[in-house]
Image 1 (cartoon, rainbow, N blue to C red):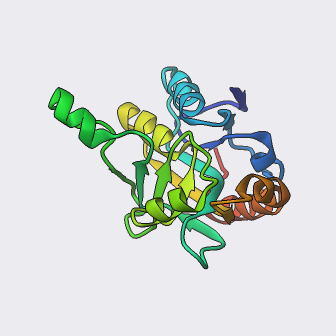
Image 2: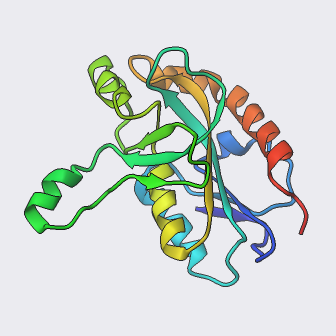
Length: 194
């Protein structure tokens, strides 16, 4: 976890997984780098949100794999699901639902599936594509932490690759272009004043 800048109650916090995704950000806003995966994302954001002051909002910028053909560009997520937790099975065991879909303020945006498994085979991709358009490794964890703290969250993902075979190689090759697109989106859509 790395926090750059000072969190204040009158401006948002930008949250990204890794420095490669943040490399072109030009901002006076605070930036939190969580590390990859749900545990890193949840613990880093929860740690920051456990302190005063809370930011006015959170904007998660990052890369995502496309689960469906033809998905490219930058997308503001409407719903986030957790794809590697069997909430239905757990509900039969405990009587409680874990990992229910979370709706975000940009309700008309696509569904993002979050999980710690890097989607690298076509059958996993096809199964997930029935439920979501995009896949990442942090969004659901960040949404959960933000929701519990009562801080509004937007998730903005730029498609880095088509999830499936070769996705890891494609991410490494495309992350710089994705980082430029995310920085451009932030410059146009996130207020930078304090």
